[in-house]
Image (tube, rainbow over all chains, first blue to last red; front, side, top):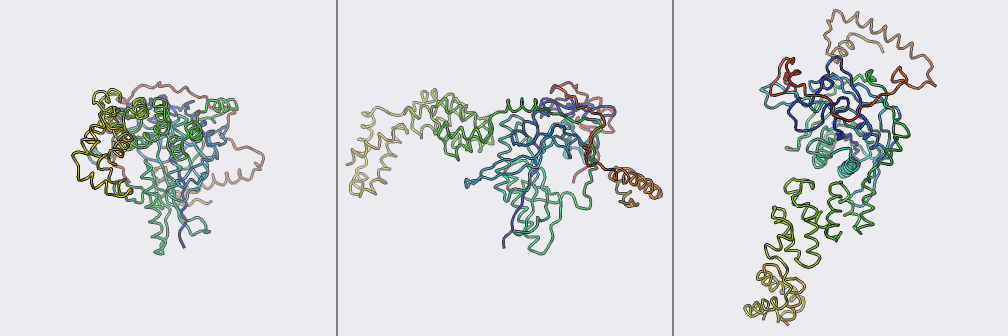
Length: 479
Length: 95
């Protein structure tokens, strides 16, 4: 009998506030080490935390986006442990009264099937600093710029049963937090970090012992780490072994994982309510104001794309998945006047080039207006789809707007039928053997063999012949 | 729950406190006295009492999301036992 996989996730979402959760330190990446660590962040005696209003607002907005209850008096607690990048000796977080209660996120799988993933709760907490192990000749360097950065930790129920579902959930969560503007969503900067809890069991059995693989920072690594851990657990159990509850670290470069903390050294965090902070109150009026200001959520945007642009469910799902992609697509559609072409180009040529160069859509060298212009020229017959790819390449390389490129390179489709006719006549005259062969073929073979003449004509016109026009002309002349 | 010298050693380790084994017995006695008092508290009937996170019936004032803190790196690194390239230096920690 096969094994059943049970997956739950904990996701750290970095809130994009201007300042930190408990201090007025600037929050930004890439600053010189420790230049954005104030006395509060450094854990200096005598300092007191003051809660950032915007962080509370953003956490509550997230709660409303997943239909969760918002805690009216949420409480900060201290999670005590010693580590050099945690100067206070405790992390200020929430436990018993988190700001966001139980909620739900709907995911869609590739098969089209929909599934609900329940959210257990989400709490507000501060991030720790960074430990740097390289370049310090056997010592560890500590940079506390990140200490005190506001996070929400989202904890799911163990509702996912394979890597595909876990990744679909992670993507949907990414879409939600970027759509409501509470997180920049840049995975490479650690804006979202995933901890994956995995256990396996025989169908109908009690839940198995779970392991936690920590700090995965890409959807791809998450998928691979889950597959690896499931495989490991099956091997252990089928060899008559036992799963040990432990934290594991996944290395994406080598596709291996190792145990990080043994059970004997299990942490006892000795939580207690933080005496420096009062309960954070959220009123009915606050909640009404948040609801009124709620931006369009991914599911609503998807429905709108299907209605307004007649996109397929699949296309709409992909294009509404991130705010940046959705905004780009809508701008291309507006400029190009054709939603289906816009969808094809954004998900096809554009996505392939972005992937190849590891760029996000926001730093695409081809702007939405430029891609729209290209599509408009494609639509009005100025250029063929083959030439369009050439124009796209040139535009990507920074050679200017599509119109200017088409003009400068003389890429306009040949619309003068007299000129094309002359080229076709020449080809027929110069390829007597192929013409003979074509004329002696049956209809099915003719369809294939005409390709030779199309190819020659495209070569002669440098791809500028209108394909339909060329085909008609060839069929007529070759009869 | 009864505290013995093993628990004392574990709690001391978690708090990074150095406790001499010779003090362990006396410490367990005192901790057990405290727990006995907690046991007594737990006998109180709190069926209709909401849990309290703070003794004052007030809520947290919130701060606007603005940058107000200056860069204090030089002062902070000056008082650190060791620093290099803008970082605090500590004995190597890696799991």
